[in-house]
Image (cartoon, rainbow, N blue to C red):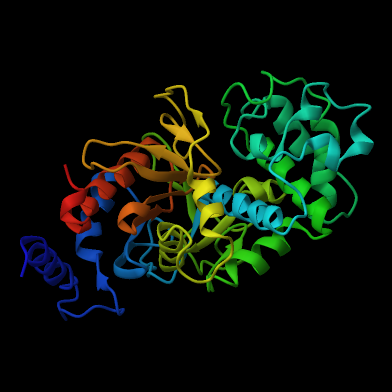
Length: 400
């Protein structure tokens, strides 16, 4: 037996000993609960979950803590956690499917899809492409007060479906000035993803919500996946998101208007799912498209994973948003000291939850980690956990 195999066996044997003393995993995967539990008190987290995927197999997973801070309602690996902006890679995948089907191209412009808006459209935005929107190089600035105002105004409209609401928002959005010429600078723009989602809706005649459920969630078997607050209205049947408050206990946010990002922001980040399903999504990406289901060609998935633009370093970036590295289509490529191979990474947060996904296609390996609170402490927790899990589970030849 190799040293790496022995090390992995010893670790798995240790983590299988859960706190109830039975020494058995609740699931076919080895339990990570014993590894995760110290993070609750160390970082003041209501709950935390994680999973490891190797060659498409979930080899270890765990979830500890409570659905609601101050209660004893425990989480499980089947509980739904919010993934925030990790949804962006799924929106990019939807776009790739339509590109492969010949419905549009990566160079399709905003004005081509919405010719009726060109008379009021910012002159520079007319030429912005689908690829630029998905790589945050369209020139649309990061979230602004004007963007927030548009979202809030959309709530006051008469009864409309979400694709109609998005169209109303982009009618106003396209008239706003860009901060840079398309294709020249990176700016992490949620509104850019909303605009890209609206383009997909116009091309297909279906809402983005229908598209992601039918073309991503269902084919990949993500049975827990959904959109909006992860808990059901009136119930605490999933980990509630929490608002971190200095010097006070975190505030739990029930399903309702405050439970998630506005629904109209779907293409930029409203998905939720269990840590097991999040691991399935990560594992499918880690295969570089060589494992079923064949949603797109392997070369197309590799394009989605390939960096397009360098990200100006931003150490103060909010948790869940890129701070360094290079960006592709909903994926960030970054190098960290503990591995010879770069990671494909993304973080997601609706400011009440936080989820990280890290994959290394070269090794067909992935880590996912999730918690039902956001903020700096939560971000530190997930990064520390990912480092610990990588050192324990990554292929030996991948470590520095």
